[in-house]
Amino acid sequence: MSSTIIELNAPQTQAFDFQPSSELQIIPTPTLNTLVQQLAGFDSLTSALEYAAKGVTGYNFYDARGNLRSVLPYSVLRENARDLARRFMNFDLPRGSRVAIIADTSPEFVELFFACRYAGLVPFAMPIPVNLGSRKIYVQQLKGMLESSEASIALSNLDYIEFLNEASKENISLRWSGTPGDLKQLPVRDVDLECNHSDETAYLQFTSGSTRSPRGVVITERALMCNLQGIVRNGLEITPQDRSASWLPFYHDMGLVGLVLAPMVTQISVDYLATRDFAIRPLQWLRLISRNRCTVAFSQPFGLKLCSMRVRESDLKELDLSCWRAAGIGAEMIRPETLRAFAERFATAGFSESAFLPCYGLAESTLAVTFSKIGEGCKSIQIDSKTLIDKKMAVRLQADGRKQSEFVNCGRPLPGHTVKIMSDDGQQLPELMVGSVLVQGDSVMLGYFNNPEETNKALKSGNWLDTGDIGFLFNGDLYITGRRTDVIIVNGRNIRAQDIEELAEQQPEVRSREASAFGVTDEEGSTTIVLVIECRLTSVTERQALITRLQQLVYMAFGVNCIVELVPPHTLPRTSSGKLSRFAAKQGYIQRMGLGEQLSLAESGDR
Image 1: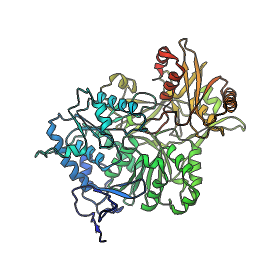
Image 2: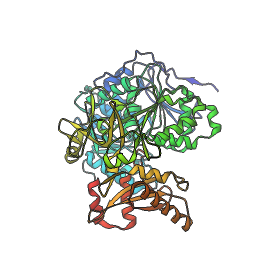
Image 3: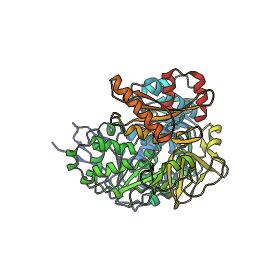
């Protein structure tokens, strides 16, 4: 049977879908480009795409079996996005109107996102359902985003259109909703597409909701371009030989900014595996890196943990990860033992622990705030736990036998950005003193869309962003110790939720390695620590023995009593980005215990 090879240096007019029975053979976009590389430095997303479209690189989409199913060169993306932008013009929307897009890992999402910018509209990505069994929760999440954004248009592919239709009912701001296919049925308006300006809003990024309800972060073109330039030049030191691979969801800031937009503004190719496919078989992500010789790939820590747990010894023989020079780690607390376990597991496959690149960021600062030094791997510091709890001071561990806490070096701020540590009474703290992490720089958001109350809480005088995280500086580098809402104050003592969770996860019965700790405050203002653990034990005697042991361990370590609740696997809720949500876990506990509305109101200060 004859095959047709698509010449990717020739302009195309559509993305090509992989059909096993078709005579059409597709090949991934190349790593080496025909275009002189520019490392960002553009004034808008569309101007960056106009340049990238002159080359032969682009996006590649793989299925669960590792087969290439779609190729979207930047040249094709430009043409398709401009075509869709002129179809958007049929709605005669004011410039800056919001467009909601359910963000599956697909060429259609990328085309719609850029089409919005060509049309002067503001896109935002909505998540796909984490668990299809939670239909009501998912629809409510979509409904909240559509209402808070005052979206004029909403789009979804056929897989999720029913969810979108249900969420769109009785929405007074929504002018139209449908699928990309429905949009393509509209006529192409013969109009000129205006240039975007750096002060315009590029997109909204909804926060993951790990501690509260999601909010729409307003990111301007200027903030985006500033952050992308810092990432690709100073953080990753991108070269023309680089290629990326990603399983991160497009609706998460690290997935969107770091692995969709950053490759485009540097004109490098990127290979995608859908998040749900990665979760089922993480080996496919590693195979992509190995087979396509990818050099840059990011993950949240739980993704590396999943690889270490799921990839078999026999699978290692087919992998060559020696090409992987920048293994970015971020988006949640980084535990050094997770990285050490991954490096040990994949050393025989050529992975070098010097490739680890811990970083720190958040959606409110577009994405990145700090990067560790590339090529130096993960560096950490061991801190005396008692001094950390009692004095909020990071004292380096010297005496043997004392309980320690180990924190990862997240590096220094990107150029044009400053990080400072503040006390509860608003005083700037010296190095090794633990306090609130504040960030200032051109990447910081304008605010939360239509939410002045939350904006005023987050943005302080001088445009300092209160990140909500806690940490300290040492030799100019940032170390994150947790989130402010994850610190439980009991009898005046500050106890990190992560420290309590680690005690649980060290127990052999906690096979799922999932635990969530938080404090509940009663009407009299008294706080009790609660530890919820996923556990498979069925024997009443064994369950009670585990509960008693954990209570004793917590008391010995922190001098406080706690409540331990054992729940079935998959009970603890996660955010749309895959992180455990302590806020949602707390609400679930309150509901299961029937503690009532008054307790929920007492807890509202933690939100």
